[in-house]
Length: 141
Image 1: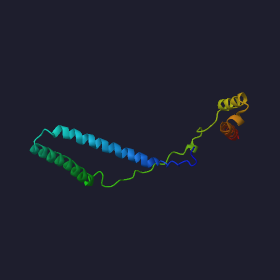
Image 2 (image 1 turned 45 degrees about the vertical axis):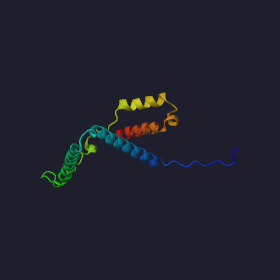
Image 3 (image 1 turned 180 degrees about the vertical axis):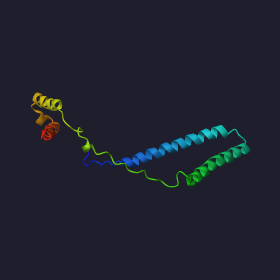
């Protein structure tokens, strides 16, 4: 019988995730190195050096090209010009924009009659229906 229980250390999830990612990267690098080693271990030393120089020149050149290309400025990208903001057409100027028809009003009334416990079951929907009714009555004035 144990009198004192050992507290287990809390696992820090971000550290665990970072460790997993780092291990995955190291594993893929190790696989790539082993593959290249098995491919080139039968080559002569001069062939290996030529291959190494070729790879270094290729990837070094691509890196330098990417860096130089990022500083290259073309005429189209000299300045970012903002586009003018368009003002939307005022919807309240339209006469028939949000008119509630008699048919819609009848549908709201019918729905409220068929669902008498609506205020308890779905108070948000009930509030919306009341708002529609108020809008209908206000447009009739």
